Image: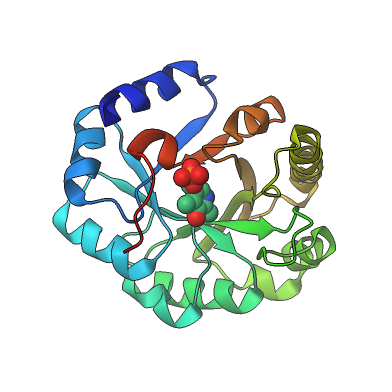
Length: 222
Ligand SMILES: *Cc1c(COP(=O)(O)O)cnc(C)c1O
């Protein structure tokens, strides 16, 4: 199967309201161009440096999504072009994104990462912490960010009922977030689902899936 075929098969199976982020981490520019030529414009990377290098050498109508865990001190390298940042899990990071966005006279779209998996290693805020964040007075001062919704990763398990339950929890919380809508909180995006679980995620209400290996094949980290 080619990248183009993989991409088209997935795209054709998606409901109209679901956006596909093609996750290109570790894959070369030539592979990204193959997806680009097949019409894909939304791509995701999990390391800022790798995303910056790819941004520099690829067409400028690509919408780059940062899907990895963020280090505040690196936000400045992508602030001039990043389209959507998925993995925000602290007020400190939001403040830094706001500061860098202001320098470029931009508003940067962000998703708050919520910890839904039971595994200890996953990043993200608890539901209570997200509620505190979106209702805090300090957030009102961050005029150069736009919180567009939530992102979550389910447990890495074969047990589909666990994955469904975790996604369901996130969707319920996402719906309840509508009551906090404000100038910089506009929840319209629910980013959940990867190659292994995006079908379950869509059943549970995902509006954005992040798919890498099902399009580009397995990753080689060497
Ligand atoms: C790598 C990655 C993906 C894509 O994973 P696949 O299993 O290859 O689809 C999705 N989300 C995040 C946060 C990732 O780091």
